[in-house]
Image 1 (tube, rainbow, N blue to C red):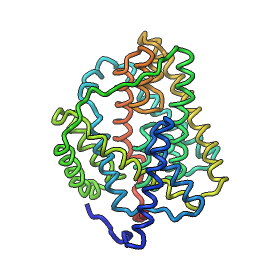
Image 2: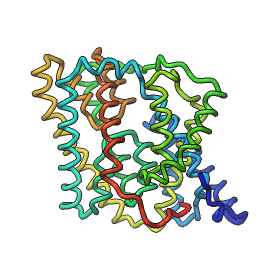
Image 3: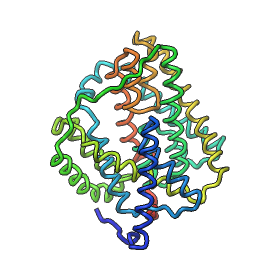
Length: 354
């Protein structure tokens, strides 16, 4: 993978260090107060605030590419062969999930386009249900408004993990528990080897014109190795938080010159979009739950536009089947990953360093 070092002049290194320091501080603060996706959302918010008050925050393109490759590899390692082996047990609910995903990806973008005047590409990206880090990485490499995408998906995550969690907890007497993954942590030599291999496949993905090749190519490579059983474990968490801080800081830096009106319009669009998505998936979950004789809340959590980290935690806390929820979240993630090359075009212009 060719890395453009043009922007990495000594006059800008200092501001890159300042930007990373601001982003790290934001991540630490968000983590301390218990916010979801702390290092990604915290760095994004803190750097965005600095950008709005005209601090010249920026990060060079090579650093961004490094973070995306590592994030793609980390996310690929979370794809579990054992979860895939359980999928044939849930044919009706999986069909319902895919139908719901198609409806969601049709209705929500049209709502955002018609009522909030968001362009088609950005509206589609705003409607994708998935992990915040995944969406942020994609939006930064595709021809979309990454600032608006970041605002809408941060709102989605905040609503799902705070308001929805609180409602479910009150209704079902949920206890405050956490789940520890039963997957082992890969040793550092294996992890670094996977990262190196991930860098090696990026040029191939670029020639094939994959969208966001520095992210999707490593994810597919490591995900394939994980689901085939070649590797069985997660990458060390010490690789995760620096990559999240860099990604969040890159998005935050793009808020330079953003007006309060833009932020307010994006907030309104985000709240409307998440309400529509939650309602649509809830309506679909009712008949599926009735047909399969499963608890409605279990099916709804499996369909909810959250992620395969937060929703299984809620399911486990309620005494439901976390494997069922995680399996459906994974299926949706894989379906989205396969269809993204057909939904989005790669930008003709080379992305800037911020």
